[in-house]
Image (tube, rainbow, N blue to C red):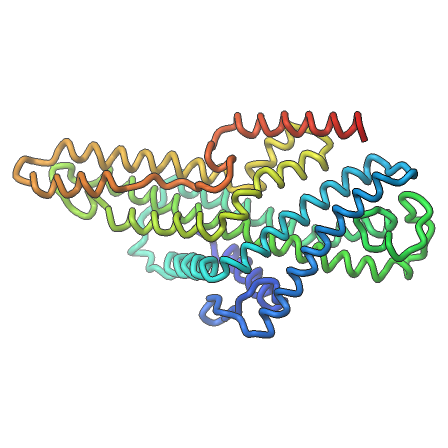
Length: 384
C-alpha cells in the first residue's frame, strides 16, 4: 500500500504534529501509534484552536470594515482576504473535528498504521504478485502524498512573504498595529518593523497547513486501504470455485470489516468531508481568479475524490461477483444458500457519504461548481 519512505514521511508528520501539540495525541515512535494526550498537551491544543477561531473572526470583521471605508481596497487584496477567510474557516472546522472526534480519529489512525506495518512486515512468500493496476495505484498514491507533503513544507514560507509585501492588508494583524496610510504599504516600513508579524503569520500558516495535511492524508490513505482490500476481494472471487460455498466465495467477514472502516471514516471526518470540497475549490478558484479548467484538474489532487469514485466502482464489482456466485450453488447447499442470501442483502454499499462532491463521483459536479465559482467571481469584479 505505502512504500517505506512514504510511511516514514507520514510518521514524521504525526510526530511533528504531536510534538507541537497541533494534534491532541501523544505519538510513540517505537510502537508507531498515537495515544491519548496529557493534560498540558490538551491545553496547548485548545490554545491553537482558540487562535484559529479568533483569526477566522478577525479576517471576517476586517474585510467587512475595509469594504465600508472610503479608501478603495484593491481587487487583489479583496481576493486574498476572501481566500484567507475560507482557509481559516476550513482550518477551524478541522480543529473542531479533531477536538470532538479525536478518539474516533485516533482509532482510525492506529488501525491504518497497523495495516501499513503488517503489509510491509509480511514475508515475501506470503505476498501475492501485484497486478499492473495495483502497482500503478501505489505509484499514484505515493505521488499524491509526496505532492501534499512538499506543499505542506514550503507553503508557510511562501505565504509569509505576503506580509512583507502587503503588511497593510486587512486580514493581517500588522494592519492593526502599523500606521498604515494605504495599500499595500510594503515599502513604507522597515523589515525590522514587519518581522514580528512575519513570525506570527508563519505560526498561523503552520497551523493551517499542518491541520489540513493531516486530515487530507488520513482520509486519502483510509480510502486507499479500502480500495486495495476490495481489489484483493474481487481477485479472490474470480479465482474461487463457483460451485462451493466458502469464505473465499462469500467473504462476508472481510467485507464487514471494510464497512466498519468506512463507517468510522464517515463518522470521524464528517465535518471536514462535508465542507472540504466546496470551501477548498472555492478558495482555489478565487485565487486562480476563475480558471475553471485548472480548478477541475486540481480537484482530484487536492481531494480524495478520485479514490472515492474508485472505491464505489470496485465495490459494485465485488457485490456483483458475489451475487453471480449464488446462481451456481448446488441444490444440496440450499440452506447455506439462503443464509448467504440474507447476509448478502445486508451488505451496504461502501461510499464516502459526507459532502456533495463525495456523493457523486463524476466530473459534472466539479463542472457545475466551477461554473458557480465563475459567476461568483464575475459578481466580485462587477460589484466590488
